[in-house]
Length: 233
Ligand code: FPP
Image (tube, rainbow, N blue to C red; front, side, top):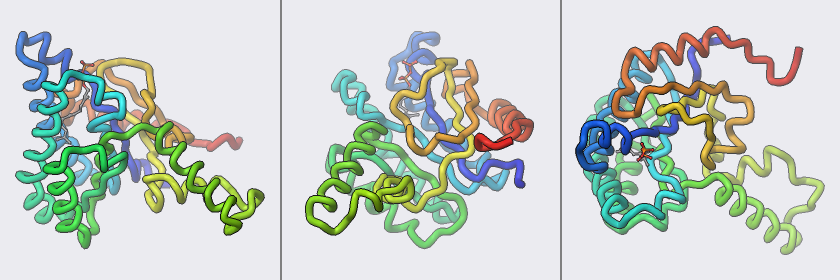
């Protein structure tokens, strides 16, 4: 069994605290977080990780100030515009999960353009979770299955974990092997609840803008030490 995780999911927390420590605007913390995104992507490429799923904007994040939401949306748009040529060069395919219709039109357009441009790349898969909430995702899947049962096209006894998985935003993607959370909080925060059932969890106190090679390789080393039994002996 390979000791390098095939799929890493990250809760990128701590941009705000990083900015506060430096006495600068939260938006600047997010900007610096964008640079960590690029570092993490390059490290995944270097180590042969095939999937990287980043919690870039949660359903709950809509509750932040308009100023901060706008700054994050602007940053996303800018990141995609600037980095899509590099994704092409590095053979990265971009995916997005979440209630994407909630995003402002300029972001949706850019996101679709970047996903379309990279769709034939088969190196690393970068998945951005945007306006994403796991409970919302599971609710939408259950609703869709209930509609099929009501229409008579699906029997309740035919609903299996696989059927449910196939109705999530992540249909067709492998489950994360390793979940990293920065900034020390011991929480999952409505992230990939179904998909991380057997993921190894790794929490570091390092704030996301400071997350780099040292922390990434420490997480890989810790993962390599874990014995994954999937509930078996
Ligand atoms: C959590 O930090 C982080 C976010 C809510 C947004 C994550 C976004 C980025 C890393 C920006 C770049 C992303 C892309 C894809 C370009 P926080 O603000 O909750 O930090 P705090 O808990 O310290 O306040």
